[in-house]
Each structure stands twice: as C-alpha cells, then as structure tokens.
Length: 216
Image (tube, rainbow, N blue to C red):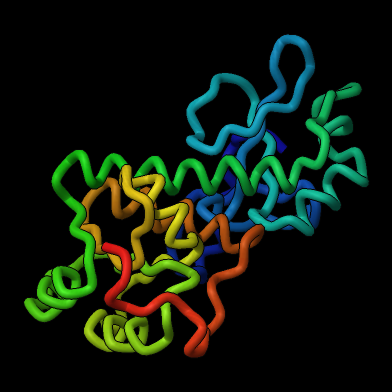
C-alpha cells in the first residue's frame, strides 16, 4: 500500500489519515504506525519523521507487527522485488524511537520549555499549567504518585531511566521533569506512544526505586 489515504467510512469519527498495515493488511490511523521507504539501493529505511521522499510503506508501531511484516516478506511484495531489511528491525526501531524522544526532551530544555526537579515540577503542576510530565522508570513510587495526582489526566511519559533522562538533559541523572504544551511536547507524546509497542511503560515500583528527592 502506498501513501494514498484510505477514506474512513461515513459513520466513523474523524482521526488521522488512514494507511494499510502491511502485517495485518487492515487500515488504521497512521498516527499509530511507522512509515518506511525503499532507497535507490533497495534498502528499507525507517522514516520516523514521515518526511522522506518516495512511496511509503506502513506498519503498526509494535514489535510483533514489524516482525510479522519481515517474516512474511511484505516489504518485498509491496516494493515489487527484494528489499534489504536491517537486521533485527524491531530492536533498531526501538533505538531510533528512544533517540527521537530524548532529542525532543533535549530540544525542550534548550527552548526553555522544560523544568526539572521534584519541587519545581510539583510547583508548576500546582498552577494547573498544561504540559507533559516526565518521570524516570526507576523513580520511587511515592514521588511518582504525588506528581501523577497533581498531573491528573494529563500525559505522562515514563519510558526512560533516570540515566537516559539525564543524558538528554546534560546531567548525570534526572528523575522528574515537565514540558509545557507545544510542538515539542506533542512530538514527544506522539513518539512515546509509538515506543509503547517496543518498550513497555514503567511498572509501579516499590521502595527500591530512586527516591523522589534524588536527581533533578
């Protein structure tokens, strides 16, 4: 299936443009899918930003669907010939999505749209300002619960360890942070949702997690 949009049925609620998943062969909202193109050397190239030229091939954003598409040689079939697929494509996609998310976090810091530290995040959440709550996957449950209660129904991104968050922000470790609503926050939540299919969100942790006052 190319990039040509599938028109939803008249009785469905409008979402994003629909594309056909190569693995399931069913159509769905492209915002939950990953786009691929084939370059001039017939190599499969992930197009996570959705900007590369050429015919696009779409797969639901999870490791199982990607592995199934590779196993069924769906890319070869749709591209009309053999396509060189990167080894362990699901693992590659996880790494690329992680890097996109961390890049967005770093850009938010440089743009002055991010704050970090338990007390600082708690203070901005108390004002009701809309934004994305970031918490390390190895944060202690007590601090996590406190900030999530203040965040309410707002988005939470908790896919990354304190070391990963720290690296994105130029520090040794970051446990809690917050990004105000805007283009970068939207990019982060979109990519984090896609990452859900490859890296599970953090489970609740007990006393062994990082204390909420540690890190920044």
